Length: 121
Image 1 (cartoon, one colour):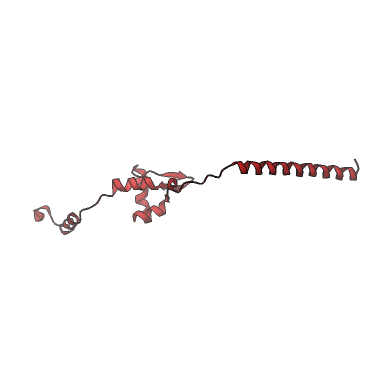
Image 2 (cartoon, rainbow, N blue to C red; image 1 turned 90 degrees about the horizontal axis):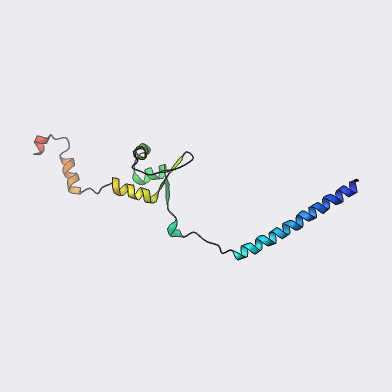
C-alpha cells in the first residue's frame, strides 16, 4: 500500500466509526425518550451523621461515642475508615439512653451531693 491508499483507508475507518457513533447517539436518544425519570422521594431520604456531627448533636465527646459503639449501644456503619450513624438509629439510642429527669429529683440530688446518708435522713 502506498501512502495515498493508507490515508484513504484511515479516512474510511474514521467515517465508519463516526456513522456508528451517530447511530448509537440516535438509539440512546430514543431510549431516553421512552424512560420516565424517577426522582427520589424526600420522605425516604434519611439523614446520616458522622462522628463529629453526632458529638455536636449530643454534646458529648468522640470517646463516649466510640465507647457506646463498642458496647453495642449505638449502631453504626463504616465506609472505609469513616463511621456513620443513621438518624433513626440515633433517635432510638437517645430514647433508650437519655431519660427525662424530673427537675425536683435533680435539685434534691444536687442539694444532697457530698452529704453522708445519715445527714440526708
